[in-house]
Structure formats: C-alpha cells, structure tokens
Length: 342
Image (cartoon, rainbow, N blue to C red; front, side):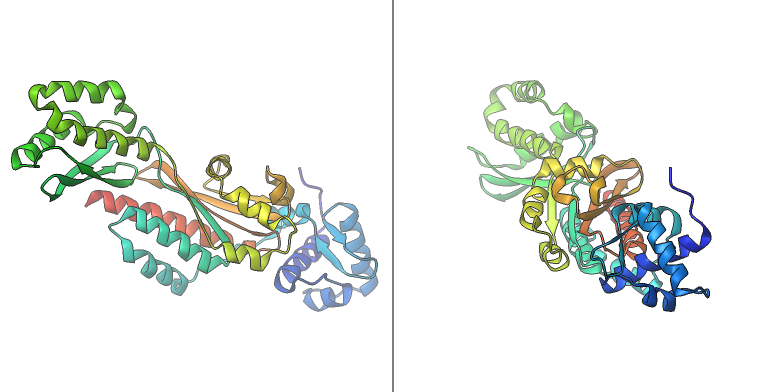
C-alpha cells in the first residue's frame, strides 16, 4: 500500500524523478520551481521535499544538496505517476527493419534482437532462448554433406532450431536417408522433446534389426539434439553499456552474476506479468541492489517461450524503456511464430 500524497506532492515527486533521470544531479528547490506547472513559494517547495524525504520517497545525499529519488520513490513514480511514452512509428520501423534480417533463422533472430535492444536502450541485455521439454518436434532434416557425414536438424513448436554434424560408419545412401525420414514421420514428429528418452532411442535402434548399426549414430544424434533443446540458453549483450552507466563498486560482481544461467533464468521466470520491473532493493540479489531490471516474456503461438531483460542504473528512463522492451519482445514472438509456419 502506498502513502496518500496530495496532488502537489505528486507533481513535485514526479518532477524530481524526471529531472534527476535527465541530469543525474540532485534536484534543488530553485531548479524544481522552474519545472513545476503551478506557482508556489520556494519555502513551500522545500517543506514538501522535506516531507517526501520523511516518507522515504526522497533522500538528501549531502546537507546542502538537493534531493534524489529513493528506490521507493522510483517505484511510486512508475506505478502511480509516470506517463509511459509509446514508441513512435519511426522507432518501430527501425526495429522492424533490423529484426527482419534473420527472419528464417530463430537462433540468429534472438541474437540480433539482443543486440538491437542493447543499442536502443543503452543498457545491458540478458535473454533466454525458447526452452520447453513439452515443445513438440515439428520437423527433422537429415542432410548428407559427405559420403559418411550428414547434418541432422530439429525444429520444435516453441521456435528452437538446432543442428549437429553426424558421422556414420557406412555410406549415407538414399535408402538410409529414406529409412530415417520414415522413422521420423512414424516415431518422432509430433512427439514432445521430453519423449525422446534413452529407452525410446534404444527401442528405435533395436527395431532396425541388422541395420541398427547403420542407423544408431543418426538416432543418437537426434537424442543429443533433444537434450540440447530441453536446456535454456542465456545470452548476454551490451556489457559495456553497464560499465558506462553504472559506477557501482559491485560492477564486476554484477557482470559475474549475470553470466550465470541459473540466476538469469530464475530472474526472468519469477515475474507474473507480461512485463516486469525490479528496482534496486526489490532485486533478489545484493549485487543488483543499486540497479533496475526490466524484463518481458515472449510467447510463440500462445506458448511461453523465453524472455528479454535489460539491466541498468536505477536512474534509467522507465517511461521510454518499458515500451521499448515490450515492443521488441512481442515482435520476437510474432517473428518466431511466422518462422514456424513456413
């Protein structure tokens, strides 16, 4: 529950937050007077600022300096006072154009999206690839590239595309390739990734009888691909943005923390909304106590598939960054869904 603020206190708090985000300098009463859209004395402003400080929404870094927002003040501003700025059509077109480069390659699409988000927001970006053991196998390809070598590729309903090189002990004849596609159609397509277990693989290999030695390397490669797909991968972009925008003594501890897949996966899976914001001490890790994290989940054909998040100073421009993260995340889900339709 928030404390009840008068309209004047709300406008003063909003002005201080917005001015501090813009300049990075503590906001004094004289600067504040020039920002307000109503007339009030300097003494009244100072009194209101003092009361907002007592409520824990502002703090004074030095006795003679102005005020800066506390983490609680940022939270009140975001939830109660902020007017979210929508992306204009030019910004949307720019993102759409850059995202369309890798339209048919889900893995490169996600990498490109992370790079774009780091560039647009000037923050560090973490993202997770689609990972769901319940995702269904949509397509499996066997592509011979030499007499005894082929690429095995697997595409799932959640948008994951993985491939591996497979080497066999025999020549990959047309007969073997045809046998593989028959096997895939009858036993693999439409199954979930979780279905591809050791017992199932052993059963499939045995079913080929005297030809099992020819087929086993290919079937084992399929199992390895399924295992890879079941694991969520974490991507990290824009580390230099974090170093530029944050002077925290914990900076290298933050970088080390965000390289841990379990940490990032835990952070982005903890939110209940389509877009989530942790400010300062709201973050579950002490290394992030002076940082803010915005993350948004993307879904593919209605299936929750992964997330993008940005990490920066608590002084980040929430009004513009929240819609940027949301737009890009939604765009990723749409493009991945279109890829799966092809």
